[in-house]
Length: 80
Image (cartoon, rainbow, N blue to C red; front, side):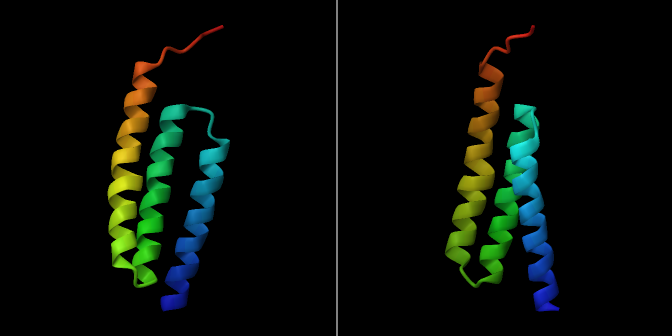
C-alpha cells in the first residue's frame, strides 16, 4: 500500500510539474504550482520529514501562491 501511494504521488508530482511548464495562462500556472507544492508537502510527510512538509505547505503552497496571484493582478496584459 505504501509504495502505491508513493507512486501515485510521484506521478501526480510529475504531471503538475509538466502542466506548470505547458500552461500559457499565468493565473492557472500559479494555481497548478500551488498543487505541486501541496503534493511535495505530502511527499515530505511520507518521507518522515514533517518540518520540511510544514515549510513547503506554508511557503510553497501558501505565501508563494498568494504573492504570484497578487503580482499577476497588478501587471497589465498587452493584447494584440
